Amino acid sequence: MLRNRLEAPAPMPTHFVKSSPVARGFRLSMARLLAVFGVLSLLGCGAASAQEAGKFGTSLESEFHFGIVGASNFKERADMGTVHADDWGTRDVVSMKVSEAFLIRFGMEWQRRDFSVPHFASIPTKLQMSTLVVGADLQLGDAWIVRVEVQPGFYSGGTNLREKNFQAPVIVGASYFVSSDLQFVAGISIDPDRKYPVLPGIGFRYRCATDWVLDFILPTPRIEYNFSKSLLLYVGGDFQGETYRVDGDFGTARGVPKLNDAVVDYSQIRVGAGASWKIGSNLTLEMEAGFVPVQEFDFHRADVKTRATDTPPYGAVQLKAAF
Figure 1 (cartoon, rainbow, N blue to C red):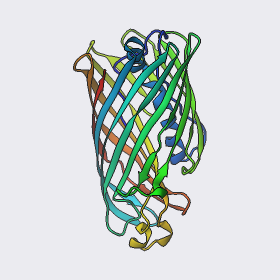
Figure 2: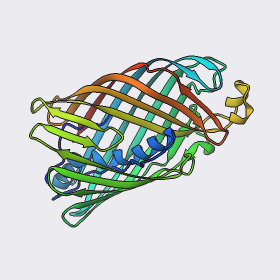
Figure 3: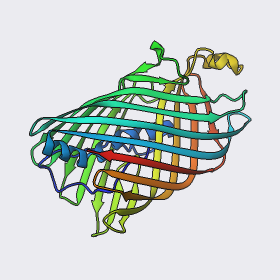
């Protein structure tokens, strides 16, 4: 998912700043790598909303995103045909100030991925998540922010809200502000259905010059250039991944019964360039395009893995509001 990065982290905290955990180092499988990246995203992108909550008691973060990926050839043990993909979703979270050092957060997130898939392929036609967002931010001293977030909901390969599809991944992370120009983040992600249930991660964000920022907080590491007060240009990556459970007849319909009710880790890496335009004080539009060198479906419990064998183009857009 894209993240709005138009605002640099505020000079450290009279109020909260979001942090984000991820990055595990050496010899990671793709599913493990992307799951690690997911930890850091929550820790790196909330400074503005936390400050608003600090000023006014309550703030709202709302975003909508849409992306499309071109034709990809997938392969398991043999070629499985061409697949197109698109995704869209929304995330809406309210932050409420309880005290000078404590915020609570509550909201919802919905995301859906659709795939044009040959009927015989071991690839879902859709992956969908519908969740609540429940969490809290705690400021410790002058430089530390700690975040805890749980997303209970349904992560499925269809539209049925089945008990088997229910999961509640947890993220715990911390952000440390060395100065107004340098922020370090670290944390841990817990998801029992994932191939690697517990994953740690680290990252940093450094303003190295007046208009240049090295934002290496995964899952969207970037080099950013502030072209003007309202326009930011960037190049970088977008590491996406989530864990779902497919339907009870998914495998039977494809001649692979062991994939019925199977858990699948979906992974995708995007590399490209984009622009973030601050339309007004509360609204930002972000657009980007590039290529997708990695797409993978890993049914890790059934020992079935399907991956793309080429690098299709992609395009994405995000609209984000903060009040």
